[in-house]
Image (tube, rainbow, N blue to C red; front, side):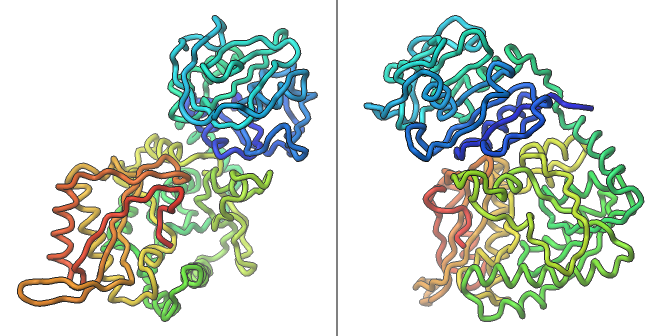
Length: 510
């Protein structure tokens, strides 16, 4: 089935992925492409959206896009930089803003137009720009204003071209979803046909055609992405999927046995490999976070490769790569959305693993992966699991790694996570974990003076991990958890709670 598709041209905005996700929440498939790599076959797209950008249209280095095959031929929506671009280079004028145009604002004037149907004066929008549109482009018609921004929204008469100086994709624009729905469904006449069920059906069919009778090997991590990828492949090729779950000795307490048991119940063909000792040897004496990551990555590949060779006639390596990994690994503009990180799933394959790659989830965002898993009947407990870093507890133990430190942190982490579940807080948190600090401090236990470890607890709320806020956990919960950790875990006499947001801090400490 050929889906209705929306093309988002990325000018490097930190919000571009959010636009794609908001569009998909309307059950409409969207793709992000760099502004300077416009797909040649535009017939496959029903509408085009131009993203925001950290760049100014007034700069000599302004990002330019060829709109000859788009404007007037396809419904077009310019967001922020996109709106300013359509004005500045098509008969209007953009200048430096005299007032600060960042943060919440309210629409003070809204024209009666299909584009703004259901949106009234007073509606809150999110501004994020230092330039402002002083004069509309040729044939431009004003559609909305705020107190400080006269040309907050406009359309170009005689074509389906619309532009807004605010960001409808962010949570703070209260009617943002309505505006996107008006543009895509009412103006561009896009049929919302992108659903988890249709994705499963089409992906299974596609995998069967792509793989045929070949054998596939997949490294399971116990996380959401690799588990959903495994189930899709299992549906498509059954016994020809060989899953390998490596215990690096840095998993959570009892996680190795629990996850293996969970996979058994899903009917997957899984082999567990306990390589803890091998990882501990490789990590001995390493304190630098990057060296620790590299050592873990190297040993994982060696162990995985050894096990993959045990399976005869393997042709494919499956990976749980998801769409943000793909976007972030293709440097488009040099802007912030482009090279945030070079992701370990993409292009990180060693030369000696000469296998073809299959990535069933590479078109999905994290929340979509969960919805697809749910539509296949996967357990809510597995789908609701918090993200867990690939290097595991190694990057939550600051300094060198020893079996004793791993054991202490596993016990602390188990108390914290179990209490979150017990207090019905686990699902309200996006990610939580404990960090073992390279700090000893004085304490008193009974009548004795102690000099023991300090641990930090971390819990954040986020939608995609790109930004995150610390969670305001109840004092009673923190008090009970701290008491339990100090009383139960030998070697710890102090517990602190991390109240830093991302940015400027990161979610993990290393």
